[in-house]
Image (tube, rainbow, N blue to C red; front, side, top):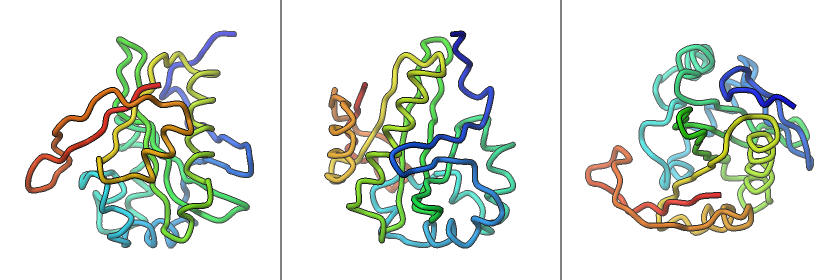
Length: 177
């Protein structure tokens, strides 16, 4: 089977009780709940696309034209309920590499949703696209994200100081699968 280029489509991924799909205007209130919770973003870069505009509806309207140049952001849903975002970003066509990330509304933490969402992204990237290398980054303090990455067979390769938009560089774990 001919594998597709990553950005050639906006996929909808379903499995294990989870659906990853593009956001639509009907998801505005749920996305706003996620983006307004500072505890959710304490371990994340400050420059994520969903934080780029104050108006959440504008974020969704621009996400799949302006934002698609840099990343694919999909909503994570369980039984139709919005749980958070899954992202494929940092695409390097020359080496068939992509990075992945996720963030969940706090009430969905600890329910295995991040693990399942990451598993869906990995299956899609491996089975349907020409991606050969999948990486991820996590703040050293984010033990929950490290556990999700390990459960999806990522290997910690290094820790480095990186600019995540804070006052000073932060220590981040670098993972590969």
